[in-house]
Image 1 (cartoon, rainbow, N blue to C red):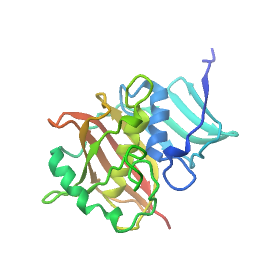
Image 2 (tube, one colour):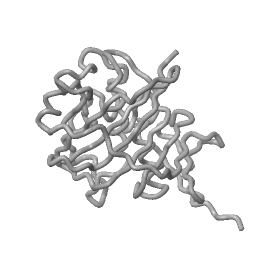
Image 3 (tube, one colour):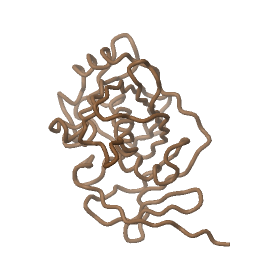
Image 4 (tube, helix red, strand yellow):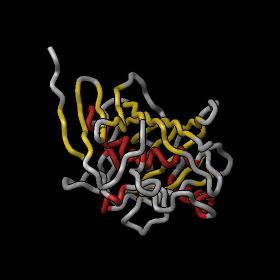
Length: 239
């Protein structure tokens, strides 16, 4: 018996860009992962190619995978994984917010228009600016969730949470002006994120490096330290 695929058409609005002309990797990872199982368990999302903006794409869910493609070319693939993501450790909100002063992007940002970490207007981008935390081997930022990212039901979608978990892992590695492209994001969302809420976003480098691959882990925490969502990322540095 062949299991029928569930197909929808997805178009990524210009607002959710990362590098110029393509979707933010975390935003598209969260979108495809959510189509798979609503992120009730960990989902591994592999980015095979950049996702274009303002273009009709095919989002397909069949059996234990969800894929995004364009004209027959595979862009993104998501599969469930038996893994529990715990994050790099809690940093109190006020301390995380103070760390933003050291955000390397203030001195040089390869993608200043990025939806998650770019220097966009308040309410348009997420404005998550992670900087080093004094006395700890992590970067952190205070995330003040804009009401403008809520969906029609008043929820903050998995795509937005994915964007936050994505970019912060890059800034655990980057110096001013440096960049890389997201290759894989494994993410898990445990609790809702609320519009207007305040959260700590924390990331750390993961041990080891394989050639051009950089590894990191990240998490979103409530003000009392409760883990909201966590991720681990693989970045591909430029040649």
